[in-house]
Amino acid sequence: MEAIKFQNTVHRDRILIAFIFLFVDLSLCSPSQTQGELPYMTSDVKEVAGKSFDYIVVGGGTAGCPLAATLSEKFSVLLIERGGSPYGNPWVMEKRYYGFSLIQTDEFSSVAQDFKSADGVRNCRGRVLGGSSAINGGFYSRASEDFIDKVGWDKELVKDAYTWVESKIVSIPELTPWQTVVEFGLLEAGILPYNGYSLEHIEGTKIGGSIFDVWGIRHTSADLLKAANPKNIVVVLNATVKNIIFEGNGNASETTVKGIRFIKSDGTTDQTYEAYLNQPKNCTSNGDVILSAGALGSPQILLSSGIGHREHFKKFSIPHVVNLKGVGKKMKDNPSIAVLVDTNPQNRLPDAPQVSGIAKDLKFIIEGGIIPTGFNATRMPIAAKIAFPVSEGELKLSSTDPRQNPSVKFNYLADENDLDDCANMVHLLERVAKSESIAFYLGVKPQNNLMTSTDGQRKFCKANVRTYYHYHGGCTVGSVVDNDYKVYGVKGLRVVDGSTFLESPGTNPMATLLMLGRYQGVKILREREHV
Image (cartoon, rainbow, N blue to C red; front, side, top):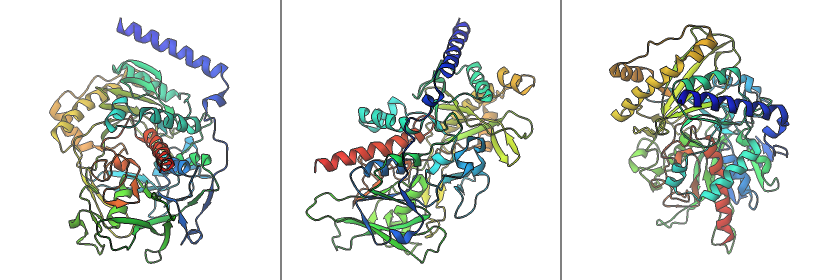
């Protein structure tokens, strides 16, 4: 009966989706408000050097762009981004080149910056306006209701913030043939129920939203800057923040932020520039420097500014400012395992994930795609991640050069619970990868030789663990920032990005980071109204 019910459900939804795309204008399935002008952007750091702003947002990434756009409604904002513009770059903007930006990287200017954790796992971080929303697979899915409850956010404001983002950059995807096959492979493996198209994070198999529109154009968080007040915002590109500047008021009981010190991303660390926060007279509430530089960048900037555990600064000539032991702690990355379903590289068109399987009380997330391994070769992995890993690591400075990656270790699968979960996940992953649907599509015979030994699965996990690119932590709420994302012990400093998360929300954090930027921006505007 379950199989019959499943088939009827799939058939019904297939007919509904077909009618949608036959009779609804395709433009309705694309972002409805992508029109508008982008704010003024410059790579000339001298244009803002020495100037003052109500708010300075460091990092024009997934959270930083909606945050800056929202704050500009009533206040002057400097948005400073270490990378360049995504616009005009086909590797970023066109879906047919999905994954190409991760192949060719360099030290200072590529849109993706490689880093290898101390665990030996290769990873990357966005270095472009739009941040990781400019280099990822574009899969858009909200956080679970449990996550929203756990962090204590205002549910109505969360809903409004999600809706604001979705109206501007999120589309309903039209499944590619391979994504349809992956969808049936997930269902065949028992990842039920079938939820059709849904933005909610719920158990089963679903089609998620996408920041690629029906024409295959990516809409990064940078597009949200079109909603900014152009009179109140300046975007500086190719500028890397070196450290935060503090007021020299001699009051040891209160550390106050004055501004930021930055360099040209392709320049030298010796040539620095400064930008400041406005200091309005007769005002009890000034603006903030807000770090939105990501799970690596934000703790790195705090440490480079002398905020962190006192012991950390002994090997660097950095004056210690605030003894905040949580900076760089609780670093987590979701352990991932990938299985290649094709036997040899092919020259297929890259294919970003559009379908997700969510299993075992939201603990296992499985997706499939086609990724380039070279400019004329692709592979077809089915990949899965553990959603709530116990193992955690630490981030430390490796250099005083802000362009260099910090040192980070995630301690993948160090906790036995994570290793047990990974073994169970491998079994489910194999069932999807060796499903009849995928075998039929590839023109091969279905395989039933699943790995059954728990010991073998555990060894397989240890030997093949990789990243799902959803690392987080380093400036977590309750340890480094309070519930308003204000840094403990410092006036005029906040952190708003994935470094504040204790876990990665949803199938992936992008939707919630986009929402968080808008959410915190609105909250700050409301706070200032009542001062």
